[in-house]
Image (cartoon, rainbow, N blue to C red; front, side):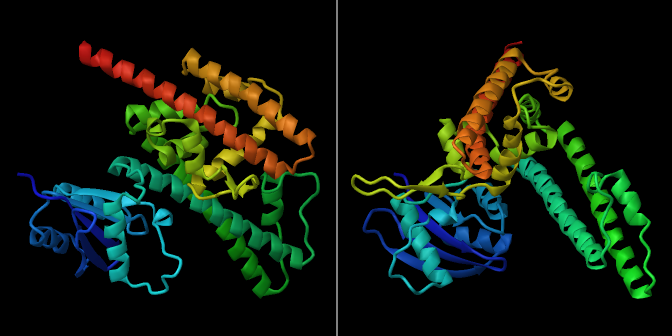
Length: 381
């Protein structure tokens, strides 16, 4: 006779884990087990104290502690899920929040099937995603460093040469030629400029590391990155970001599920005969949403295949190229149609980015099907 299922709710923090357990059955007991240290040995002892992993299902909210606990529980044989914290049900009148109560709520909701699990990447995939996000953070730091330097010079009444690209070669030569009579201002100028150079060097190192990581990535990830680059506006770094943030595309049965995952679908508040739609939900992956909106700006141009895009499509299959060419026509028509209605450009590009996700999904499914066919042929051989 199998052991009854028990549902374990874990409220995880950096140093502690609040534990609660819900017994099987709708009316089964839900009780707090206590608080244990967030340490592998303490977790192992907890599972042993609860009678072992048999019949035990655990869950905890995704957060800053990452997936280390998930991997450790899985290695112990415990069926574990990481759930979306924004989708945990909450009572409107509940005004008391403690770690123990949160753990009890997780256990009860998990038993009721009211929690939504998130996709957990493997260690190699998460390592590549951390690297891509580190490069994104470096770009933000570079922007802040440039703003500080530009505003410092503006306060002194010094403006860069007109008609030249910002932060281009001529602009940087002009910056390096700036001198101040007061030693304090000269020291500030040197520091601001050094920070700009440091940020540029940091980004270059991270991009080189991303190139090396892609060369060592699984064949499926490499194929997806290569296939996504067939889309206009999706160069290598954008393709890598999409690949690491989405993961396996086939986990989304339909493209609108991927759109909802990205937070690019409109919010809605409808009741009775009235139907009201608002701005996009933004309840999704912000990293993915950012690069898609950036890529969507290229759809304002007429469909064409330039030298750079042709080079990116060199090793892609004819099926992927056909999807990418169809995307250019459809997205450009969409951009022109919405712009003709005097919609704000930001709204137009956001709508185009949502449709771009449909073609990302189509290419991902095509690439995964091709990779499965190749693996099957290798296995047969």
